[in-house]
Length: 170
Image (cartoon, rainbow, N blue to C red; front, side, top):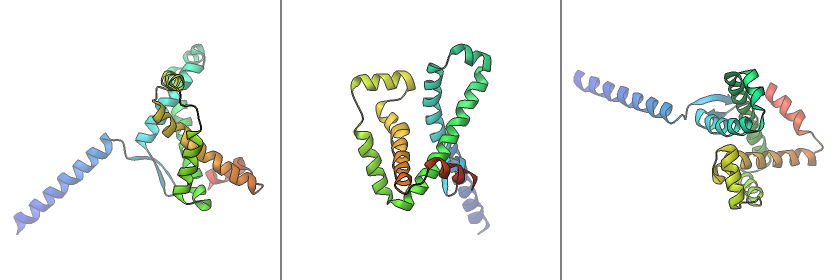
């Protein structure tokens, strides 16, 4: 009986270690909690990589050297996390207006109307280091969801910016 309990305890411990290892190696652990939403390390890393690639190409290299590359990278990461937190707030607010499926359909409809030529794909790859599909998923779809919410606020005569400031404080 004692051996059976030890064996079960050992198996539970092994399973817990495996889950933790998998969670950390695949970066599915949260880096921020926004009400009931989590921003995962994987999402932050993907978005940060694209943001860093973009900003390092458009900002004067001398400015980056003066600021310090490490400080520049930290500021880009901080701004990226800030954006992801705002997008989590947007998603929560949108669910007050629409069903999740309707939100996604509207966002995809807006994104599908964008140019998807080979030239666009090459530019996205060069500037942001993303495939066109990843660019849509990481950048365009969240931005389309934000636009939907901005339009809902405009219909109600409210300002999106005011809501964002208040939502961040609560």
